[in-house]
Structure formats: C-alpha cells, structure tokens
Length: 377
Image (cartoon, rainbow, N blue to C red; front, side, top):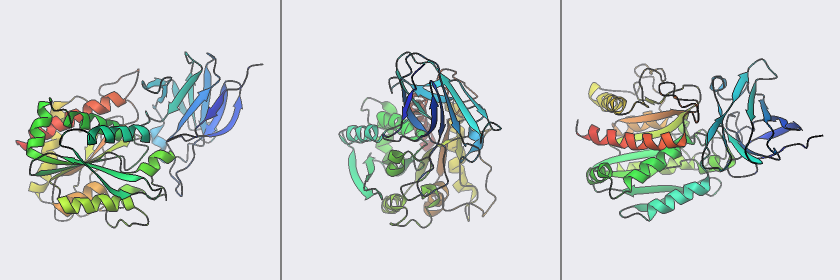
C-alpha cells in the first residue's frame, strides 16, 4: 500500500485546507481572507511523492472570488522555489462545488504549488535592503500595518516630476512585486541610461508592497482586518486601512505628477491598463496624459495590448474609492492601474511558464522606458 503524500501551508503566504488524502491524491480547499469572503490565492507544499504523479483537487471554487479565473488557468509549481513552471491543470464547474485538478510528477520528493509565483516577505525585505543601500536612495518607514509590519517607502531622483509607483494592494497579486523588483533593479543601476535620464528628470516615490499583512497571511485581496485596500482611497482610516492612509498622506506631502498602481487580473489573459475616464470634471488635456502613455507602451512592447481590458466608466461615474481614480482626481495628474495575468498572455504565449516572474520584471523595465519617452511627448 502506497504511503500518503503530506501537504502543509504553515509558512509565509501559505494558504490551503486539506480535506482528505489518499495515497498520491488529495482533496483541498482554499481558506478565505480573514474577515472576508474573498478566496482565490493558494500556496502549499507537497512532500512524500517519491516520483509518483500527484493528483490535487481544489474543491469549492464555484464561490471563489473570480470563478472566471479558473478556465484555461494553469497552476504554478516549483521544486527549487526559484523557477516556477506550469503543471497540467483543468477546471470542472460541475464537479463537486467547482474543482480545479492539478497533476504533477516531480523529479524530487518535494514541490511547491501556488496560484502565481509567490513573492515572500523575506524577499521583500531583501529588495528593500538592497535598494536602500543603493546610492541616492532614501528609505522611510511611513506607517505601520494592523499586524505591526512596516509600510516601506523608497525615494530617489533629482528631477521636478513627482512619479509614484505602488504595488500589491491586493497581496495575492504577486505579479506586482515581481514587476517592482524589475523596475527597481533598473532604476538603481548606475550604468542604466534610461534610469540615469529618469532620475535626472524625476523624483520617484515607490511603495513595492502596500499590503504586507495580507501578503504574509496568504490573502488574495485584503489586509489583516479584511479591508480591500483598493476601495479605501477616498476615506482611509487608521483603524481599517492604515496602509492607504500612510501612502495617501505621503502623496499629499510630495504631490503627484504621474502614478502607476500595479496589479494582477484573474480572468483576462493579457497585460493592460485601466484609467480614470469617469472622474468628475475630466478634460481632454488631463486624459491625454493617460492615453499617450498607453499608446507608447503598446508600441514599445509586444507583451502589452489595448484590445482586452475593463469597461470604461461613464462621465461622472468613476469609483473614487480606488487608487487610480482618486489620485487622478485629487492631483489632476495621469494615473493608471497596470494589470498582468495569472493565466498566459494569449498574444505571446509561453507554454512552459505562462505569464511569469521573469516577464513581470522585464515589463517593469519596459514601463520605465515608456515613461522616459512619455516625458518628451
């Protein structure tokens, strides 16, 4: 009789519930975000496989946050926690309560599975430390989360344009911090000509992870108390959304001339931008700042497109609780939400990895090169 595989998730960003195990097969469920109905992020470890094909069935997904995220989705798997590939994955809405089936045969006895390649808080601290030690970079702890973690903020550059980059308000959207790593590696590289030109003309304000608590807890979308931070920007509070309050207060200090908030989208297999079409009093001149940047980015990288995306808000109907719309309205500046897929990028597919950390990082550099060209428009 074959021994049972073992499954655990009691680690940074871990999330899974084990319902049953039978040999190399397991039935699992995703834990909801604390004080919230959101559930979609999973991250767990499987051991005891001994070269057997494992069958992992994640059940109860018909009431997940984004059911349309599961068709055509491929789970990510890693045996070394560095390279994340895809595992054969299928979704059956009419099986159980909606079942995602992952099959995988490891080369070793241990493998990690995740919704997307995780970005741990330890890696976040490494990123912050490395950037803070770079020439010309200032670090500030601008706030504290409900769990007592720091809200880390980096600033650098000598120019007049105030550029804000924020990421990972939704902690399960780890694409955002991989993007931040690529962007920050570029911007802190003294030999990079794009970075040198940008730092001469701009002052950058960067919060690579706006939601450390949700990140560590293994949440998809919320902070420690269940607040969706990207719906807190109109009236953030110290009791419910101290992360947003700290960031918005710092924006009020510095001013904002251009802002990008970086996210991941569960359902749409593409990279796209969302803007601020519905904010009160929007003028053609104000909106041109967004439209021109979008056009430049589309021309510069085949990983970006404008056909797929979110519906545009009608005039006067923008949701001002969101970062992009609130910042665009509050500072009368171009602001945007960058979305990357959990699925593959259908315009330029990669069957081995689908959308990957490596492509997130390259896109970070592409966005900065587009910003430099945008400044010359």
